Length: 122
Image 1 (cartoon, helix red, strand yellow):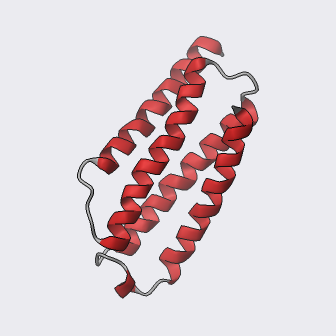
Image 2 (cartoon, one colour):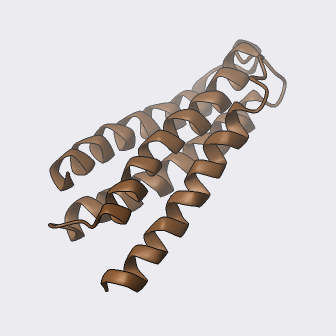
Image 3 (cartoon, one colour):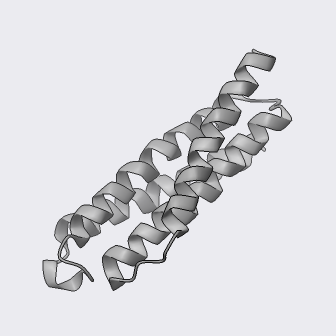
């Protein structure tokens, strides 16, 4: 599991940097909303912080507990849902309803699971 987290973190980091470059250099009229650039920047920031968390899990947990595995998988799923929804909103101007809040909730839950895991397993 740790190896998978490291691999996913590497690719999420690469796509985060790429999306940051897109946000910095894409002409404003190419975004789907007037504040599209800001939305992408928010998604990139969230993606990169959670990429670092996933990388830390991959480097630090050689034998992860069940709770740690759930937290790591939640980081991946939450990033895909939350950041993906923000990218769609920014580039196509389509709000996907409660998709981004669902992804954000998964990220919050994942942090809570990680905390409980640390309390239980050190």
